[in-house]
Length: 174
Image (cartoon, rainbow, N blue to C red; front, side, top):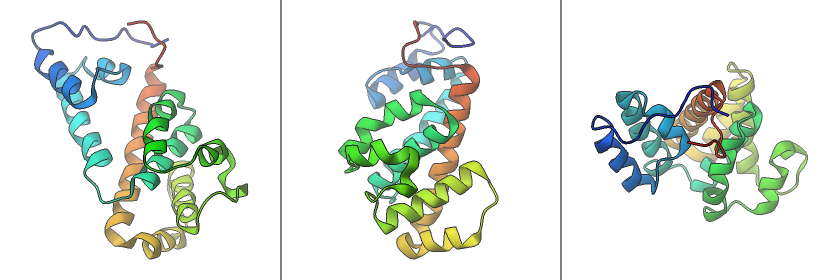
């Protein structure tokens, strides 16, 4: 249960942004309904996370693997559940999703995916990490996608921390 009530979507101040979110995302998810307590925050969040999810060169399978891995590491089930359909659509297998909790012991990840997941774990768990992890990712992805990967991991750490700080879950009544 959320620690704060969800914002009222039926106010004149929020109406344009509610319409935009509905157009872009199909509906106003619990996350956005909480963010709508502050329309400027919700608007900036929407623009930033839309760029991260839809406008970068980082391959979708890698993006979704790290988003779900961040959610697992941070204990954010809402975040993980929201991204499973995207992961499957972008080529992540159900077996990979099932093994993500202990990906290092699984044989179902490519060397590229392993490099990405190792960096994701280090950024999320340790913040400061061995430069060799980033170098391995750079060798696999190039500099642009390495930067995009780091930004994606950082962004979704922000998402999971926001969700868990406010107790946002998909089964919350609104």
